[in-house]
Image (cartoon, rainbow, N blue to C red; front, side, top):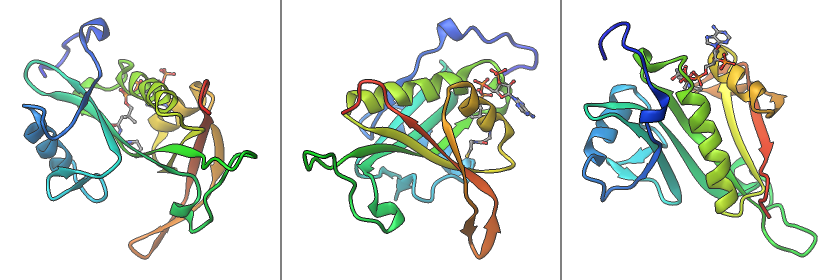
Length: 175
Ligand SMILES: CC(C)(COP(=O)(O)OP(=O)(O)OC[C@H]1O[C@@H](n2cnc3c(N)ncnc32)[C@H](O)[C@@H]1OP(=O)(O)O)[C@@H](O)C(=O)NCCC(=O)NCCS
């Protein structure tokens, strides 16, 4: 995108893509180029139970978010959380969230997070959850603005302890 270009959010849309989408290879290229492929795509194919929310322009992808619908618990080596009626509770776990540099600070990231909350509600999720490192100031600003709760928790990534926060929000209308 040319420097100084004004971004009209009303002209951008958030689409859910899968491998049948004509521009799927473009999304794969974006993910690989940003070094986000681990756990986000598998051999250039979608991860099972994942959803890919994409903000395309006519010429490029402005940003995307990948979430996975999963039962609450097993990812953290805990039993599946159930309701009092014995129904397993689901969460939308965000694994990747990225907006291309020239498109940042125009509300695209916020719109993607709001789209996750809507997707999670449609899928009957109890909550949305993610983790990000303490260096992710813009992400933190968005999460606070949208009312996510914060659970500070370091993670060990490739042998290095990284300070960060688990962000969790109850889904309105979820089960
Ligand atoms: C996080 C990211 C997706 C946000 O995308 P975006 O389109 O710029 O998001 P928005 O424009 O909706 O919101 C950005 C917010 O960050 C705020 N912000 C920007 N720089 C900031 C800084 N240095 N410190 C604090 N807040 C900051 C903006 O003011 C804005 O908040 P506001 O709407 O309340 O004013 C984008 O910055 C990105 O791709 N970063 C690199 C990858 C990343 O950090 N991913 C998330 C964690 S893994």
